[in-house]
Amino acid sequence: MLELIPLALTLLAGVGYSLAWYRLDRRGHRWPTRRAACMLAGSLCVGVALLPPVASHDDRFEVHVVQHLLLAMAAPVFLALSAPVTLALRTVPLGVRRVLLRALHSSAVGVLTAPATAVTLDLGGLYGLYLTGLYRAAERDSLIHAAVHLHMFLAGCLLSWAVIGIDPIRRRPGTGARLAALVIAAAGHDILAKLMYAWILPAGGGPAAERQAGAELMYYGGTAIEVALAVIVMTQWYLATGRALARARRRVAAPAETFAATDREHSGRT
Image (cartoon, rainbow, N blue to C red):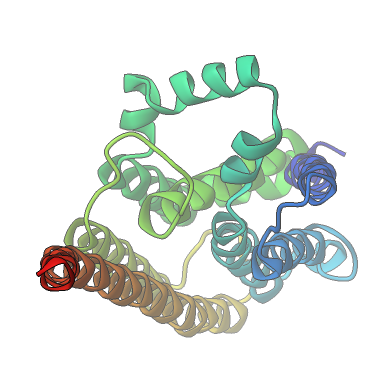
């Protein structure tokens, strides 16, 4: 049952998200449907990863890798894009909102959500799991197995939040820093998959053919998700640049329109 903690957290977040969405709609304010769809997609990814038939066959290494891709990569991306904190800030009482904003802008949260911290926790956990005896221990001990799942999920959420998240955090890094973090994470992920294939790892992962097939799946599946992440980051940059240019044009046009209106008024008087 401990292995279902990430699913329980996601379901709890989903219920809160739905209630907040309903409350916002009752006030007459719209919430983007695409964000709600992302919350649903993220929840489905977690559910597929932790429930049968996937969970009942995760003793096979290829199935375990599918769990990894869903739980630590795909689900966090969707959940970050759903902007749950932004929705909460728009619906909770003023006192709770102030506490939440104070926490989001605290030094501790700033360090935790920094790209360097997120990349270190994400890659550190993966290398520790697959290059040491931790994977074998997790297969034998349900508590360690649950802890591994929880770490994979939370580390993936931190990385997605740092790279593509649209919720407010302290000192959100620029596009260059976020892309750099993504490139480092992707390179570390690919190197790990190649090491696993070449050295037939992890220990306790079953027959050599299964371990190498899992390493290949991790390499290509992870690359596909990382490319999607890069597309999201660049799309965010493109849209932000377009909005900035539009604001600059309005600022330039405003004095000219004011001058024209003044000139017309002056001409009318004369």
